[in-house]
Image (cartoon, rainbow, N blue to C red; front, side, top):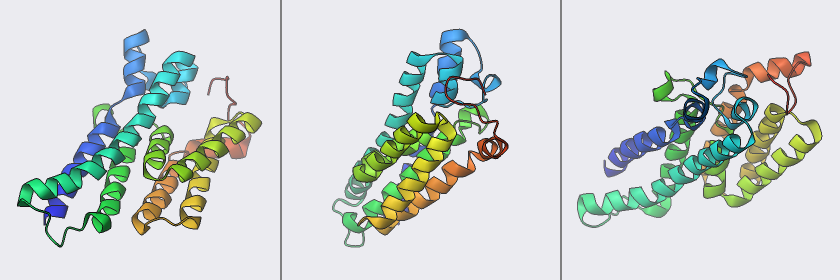
Length: 219
């Protein structure tokens, strides 16, 4: 029972953390615009780059990555703490080593969902790539680093952010399945990777049609 209460609270907090609309706020604060009405209509760092420029995009990228990191760090602290304060001592049924990976899985899903479907933006948002990278780096840095490297190499070669993002998501899935990782982490990365790719449906259609813009061009 303790785990499920903690899970619900942790999920809600991670979702609210992810739903903080950094790209939208940047557009409002810097130019007084709704960034969802410009460029690719996304609130992610790529559309911020196209619409607002390099430095705002860098700040938004960093904030979005930190949202993912923060959700994982919070989950690893909150669940054992909540169990202790709610019962005095951790019950034998609440083994942090067993349940912590599931807590991280829930928090990771929540922060991705919050970024892509923000309650503050009528359940619109970004594609969760940067936030997903933050989750990966905090959860399993080799997987996060590997995905980031593939993204960088693909972006340098193709200059297409959407293609690089999807290749990075597929790399993360391959790495998490190939490395020694807890089952909840594998499920999270598989589900998160599929979610990120699904958020790129429009980009996939443009890629197949040969009309997807390269970095530096307007969508």
